[in-house]
Length: 252
Image (tube, rainbow, N blue to C red):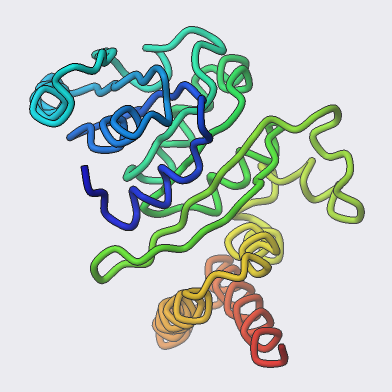
């Protein structure tokens, strides 16, 4: 099976021999690929929609008729037992929904070795939940999908103190959930973190330029209404953060 570039980048985050679950599998393309190529010895295809799960079953039957697939109807991580698989993929959903799925049972979420997450939006809020609940974001990727540039986060439970080993950032990580959305600098930090800035992604400059244009337009609209709201201060902090990263990119 041929995958889109987005799904291929996600597939590449699954190591040889790792079992995996695809939450919100839809057509089931990713699990089919991982099974077909002998990467994952066991894959779980889960979806809250019976129709989507039926589509996945049909694609599996057509593309890998001899493979044994594990289909489960249900919401989020409810379909899995703690630690049942090595890696969990949650892709193509909003960042708030992904956060809700992980937060529904934090203890179970921390039982898996790895999450590969591809939020459609609100990625800053998702990052905040991860780092506040004992996860390290080990890789940030950017990939083009039609007119969009998508973010892919690979996260794993941190060893020991969730804020340990993070140096001067330790305090901000501990208070991240409390501060995000309220404190402008904290919000900008998690929307455009060092892990993204240092990712070396070829699409980084284009992605940041798009985000700069987006938040500049929003800030200008608020100013035209002669409003100095907390929202404006957050957008201005985002703009400063993006410009700082872009300037560093130009200097390299």
